[in-house]
Image (cartoon, rainbow, N blue to C red; front, side):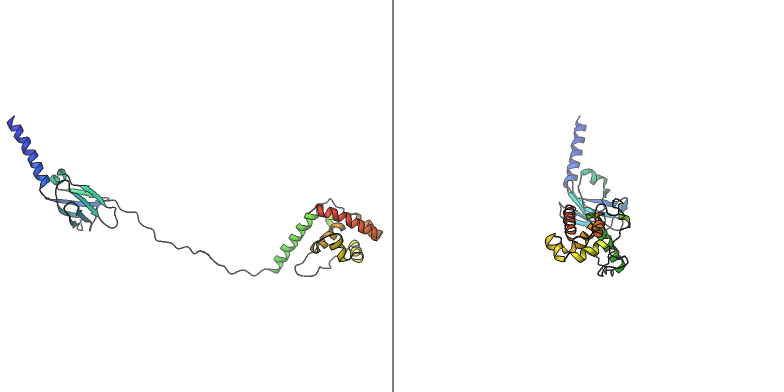
Length: 237
């Protein structure tokens, strides 16, 4: 019994002496099983430090419960508390985690400018003709769909910045309107905008009744016809 007691007392005395006495602790710092050199090993408790060699090895004086810090540029710092077992083993292995690589900054220009292409006169004229044709369909629903008598044979030519082409002779109805009605009649009496005058005349010319007016020209009948068509024209807007 006395022998066991003495053995126990001796063991705790030995442990106490280890914990209170500085020992030289040897160790190695690695990452992915590869040694890391030039790592700062700091004993925060004792205010001492050292650096690992090319093999990642170091030696530093410690006591049990001392705090060790491990610093290096490309790795997250590591902290640990020294235990009596670490001192007894005297072969400390510290594993550090590498920091993610930083990507190089890529500068994207805010705006890329291109020299404008010169306009193609033929393309511009074609676009203008298409636009005018669409406007005509808006005001004349039966235009170009076959519901107007001889409507498919009716065509209108447009040009950009040029006078109206004379490929086709002007209809007898249009000649009659231009001869008998002044410009003021359309803008003041019928309240038709100047830019829509030609479109309105085309709209009236598309009506089969315009032929009867041409066959028997009469100023009163012509004005009544234009007034009635004007009401229809306004409803289409």
